[in-house]
Amino acid sequence: MTTTTNPAPVPAFCRTPVWYPSLANHTFVTSFVRLRDEEIAALKNGENTTLPAIDVIQRLNEPMRKFKGNCFVTVDTVAPTDTERFTGKRGAVYSARSAWRFLAASAKVREAAAAGQVEHICIRPFRNMNQTREFRLFIRRRKLAGMSQYWLIRHFRRLEGIKAELLQKAAAFVDEIGWTLPEENIVMDVYFTSRGEILIVDFNPWGYPTNPLLYNDWNSDWTGPTEIRLMSPPVKISGDINVSF
Image (cartoon, rainbow, N blue to C red; front, top):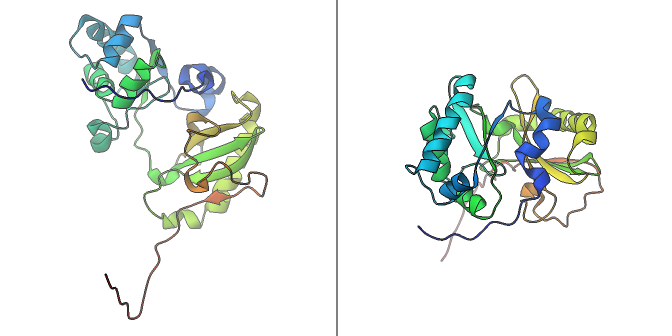
């Protein structure tokens, strides 16, 4: 197996099992399966048929059955977004065996396991999230300091007309839960449901190596008016255009 570079250490407060008890009412319902040392080693090595892997698969059966239908599985700080399953099915899994194989196939998950950053498998019901509703919130002193579109794949025109409303809702949400956040300066990824509810997806540490997305640089001025940043619409060029090489 190809050796990969260990990821930067993730602070303990960003691990889902750490922050979930205080913020369970504001995120997806989640179950946790604690892993033994030999099972973490099996995950690190991408094993699927060894006894430790089989033991985990058996323990995953019960919590996954309780959710009914497809699930989405991660480990403490990493989602297996670098896999074919995520590309093709957004990570939806139905069986415990498929869930484990999905995790073991992820280089990101294996790297986290090798770096000692995995203790649990986290299971929640699968939700086919609309990419236009995912945002990254930048929080300083437990107040919203900035907000960015999360998926920088293109301009979403529908966001322009509601961006003020989205910013207002995000600021009110942070004001409501700020006192329960695991750190005073933190980055929080959220999802706006079709009913307008805000659900926490993930936490990241403030500053490098967290991606500032449309803020581009962590040296930005975070003391000015709070704003929401969206991808710009494509530029239309008209008239006679001469291109030379």
